Image (cartoon, rainbow, N blue to C red; front, side, top):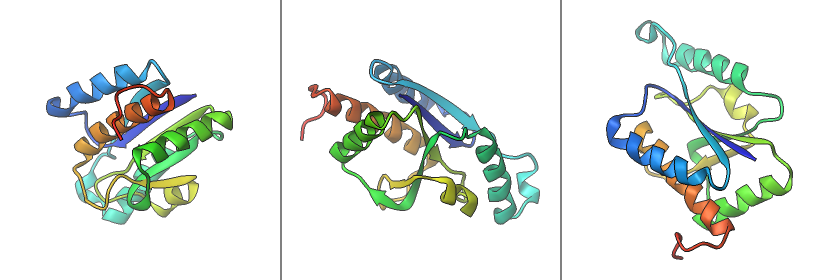
Length: 157
């Protein structure tokens, strides 16, 4: 199973890039993992929030393949413990899911079309984090879940 982490926005800031790279490299031992940055549409200053979300949605939906399992990260989604995330990943693997796309939306969230396409909406926390930190948290939690699946020592319940 492949894990694809998509984030709408600019390149990783240097202060989080090192951590993202470290956890992504570790995660490669368990699941093939890639990061993709979904570019913010040009002329964003000229667009309303609604139009911006629509343009971002068009790009995201164009990039998704029919069989991709889309997980939308959203503060209003369902909470999972680290063990719950491990179970979630293992269940998808047992179902022979080829690719899970974890999507971090843009600054104003995502369009309703993307929410409807998502098979799961996941909340990392009821707190709001900067998108850059969400990327790092996502990378670490996916790595943690992989070690839980393998019953390795990284996670200490």
